[in-house]
Image (tube, rainbow, N blue to C red; front, side, top):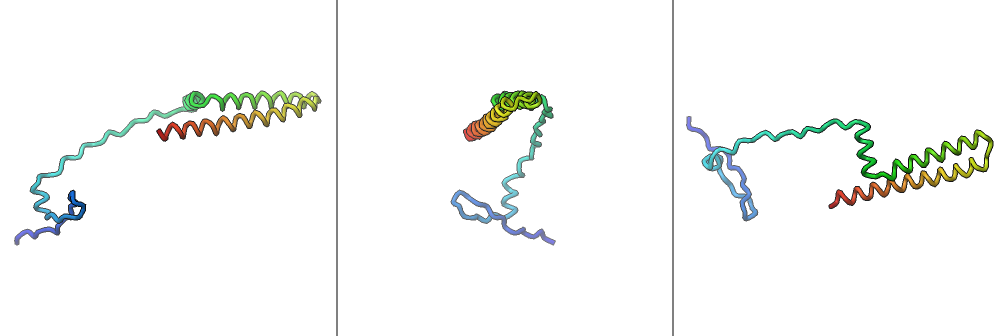
Length: 119
């Protein structure tokens, strides 16, 4: 039995339209180049401390705002426990301002990171 000619394969040439090439003609051009294995990148596991330091270097105002919020909150709670309600109320208002600063720093850092990734 004679080998049958396989169905033609479409070949999109430089003119934009499909050009029909038989399987035998495609194989006559030579075998395809061997596929070389692509090296898989190796990533190091990033721990909590490493990630915290990296994020702090990227946007140092967020940890600073968190620390200010914590200090104001602590002082406000101590004032409340001592019965100094006026100082306690003042510290709770300052806490809200510190939280707002932290949130603004977080949004600003995200905006800067987004702008850097566009470039």
